[in-house]
Amino acid sequence: MKRILVACGNGIATSTVVATKVREYLMDKGIQVETTQTKLMEVPGKVQDYDLLITTGEFEGQTGDVPVVKGMPILIGMGMEQTMEDILNYVK
Image 1 (cartoon, rainbow, N blue to C red):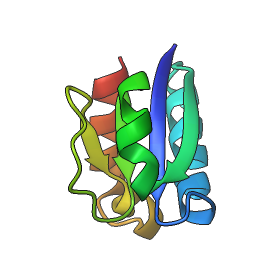
Image 2: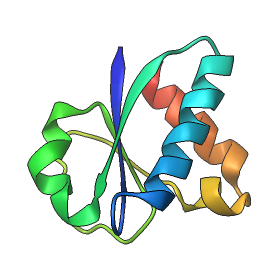
Image 3: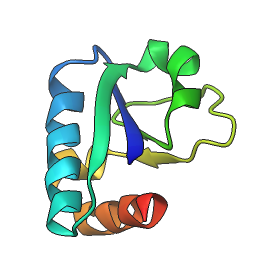
C-alpha cells in the first residue's frame, strides 16, 4: 500500500480535507492508500517514509526522491482533475 504525506501550514484542517478527497478519489479507482497529515515544517523529518508528498502551501525543502504534488487545486476545484490524475500516476 502506498503512503501519502499531506502537508499544510498547521497540519490540521486543510491537509485533512485534501487527504480525504485524495483517498476517496483513489478508492473510486480501486487503489487504497494510507494518508498522514502533517505541518509543512515537519515534512523534512517525515517525508522519506512516504511514497508521495502533497502540499497545500509553499514548500522549498528537500524531499530526496519523493515526488511532490501541489494540492491547492484539490481545495479550490480549479485544476483538480489534472492534479488527481497526477497523484494517481504516482501511486499506481
